[in-house]
Image 1 (cartoon, rainbow, N blue to C red):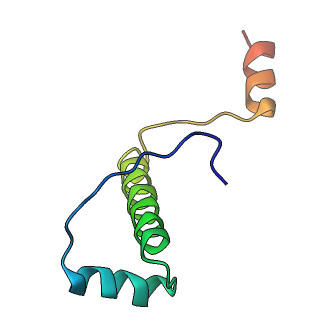
Image 2: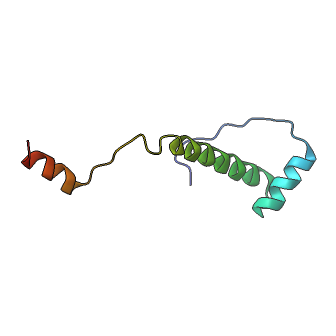
Image 3: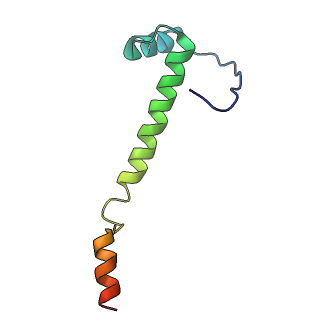
Length: 72
């Protein structure tokens, strides 16, 4: 699963938050449920960052690049 070592961090969380994460994820092991929630949160933030770039970037296919080289 992970190729690097994990760090132990102690955090005080409200029981209602932990219970909600366990319920939403369906994962009964609290540490695993919290890790899953954090990973999903980070993926969501990255996705939102990419959405802000929508329409600002142009992606070229190999065909586009070959056509540009031939017309140069």
